Image (tube, rainbow, N blue to C red; front, side):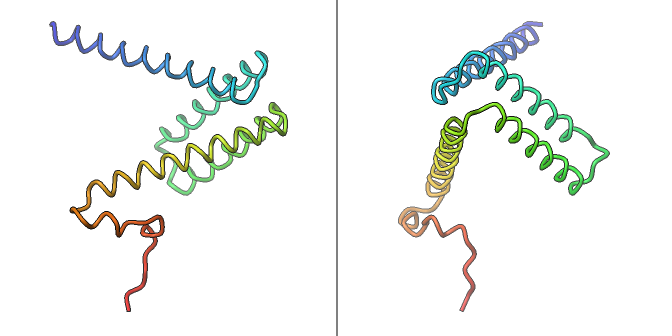
Length: 137
């Protein structure tokens, strides 16, 4: 009985932390892009709608991988079009730069993670291009 209560409590704590992090990310993005309250609210609404649509497509077991891919691509294009209408050109550029920065950060973290798994002395061989397959001579 106690295990069930503590498990429920920990799940609720995880949910609350996720909500807190989501709000913090939203506030940071609003500041970073210079959004007004109306833009911020609409952006949040569009993000939620997009996440729900993506989740529905991913959970639809009747779709095959190619169909799922086409639907996800269409949703992504719709989402980008809605952002384009909501944000000014300067805000769109700031958002693109922010996304590129996060992508580069994630790539660097992934590279470091891979390097940490290599035997000692072999990490230096791992470079940015080492993910590409090189033909054998």
